[in-house]
Image 1 (spheres, rainbow, N blue to C red):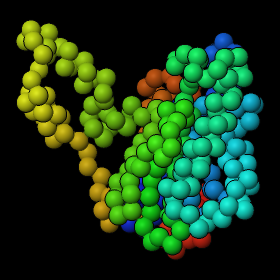
Image 2 (image 1 turned 120 degrees about the vertical axis):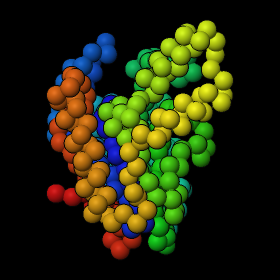
Image 3 (image 1 turned 90 degrees about the vertical axis):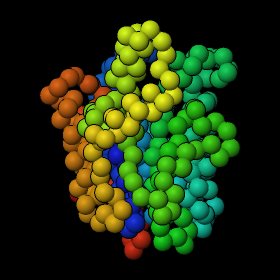
Image 4 (image 1 turned 90 degrees about the horizontal axis):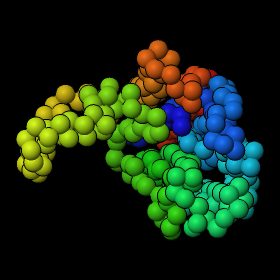
Length: 272
């Protein structure tokens, strides 16, 4: 699954990932884990970065090779003149088409007849600048969920500052929110069993307000880009450390890789 952290700040975008990638055999069993994989990419020479999570390969090819194919195939389309939303839509169409045909080949079934639990997920986190823009954006594409035109999710638009986490992020939910969705659901079930009835909307809101009081708040308004780099790396390292020491998780591992693009850079770059 991986872990990906992305910050949309006033000066640009920071994206961080782990470096493990997992290969599965035809039975769905883990066949190999590589700890030095590339899961963070510059899109051509644009001020756009992409991280990937979920499915790690199609037809034996890394997702990075498909991103390179996309960049080369669209060189004549003048991507540099497009908005980031338009680039995201082209990425969605490209990956959805490849993913759909890949699944139809391996299952020998029309896409609509493949069970949902056999379709998997390929996630792409896309951050950067639209042509001529001075403020950045952050998007998420999930294939095959985002199957219709312009269905990719805008996480943060220009002038919206914050950070988000994707894929194997339960440790971050617990760290930032103080709780994860699984615990919240279990507590609700326990309360309702004790009371012998469903919780009312007012009671649910009160429970949510109590939990939110203990959330850690990271100040992203006005955050310098270097602080965003440090915080993104910290959070990925936190997840890596959690799965190294607290519990086994063979598909999150390796090291933290961080990339950044700012308003005064010519392109997204991956930091050493």
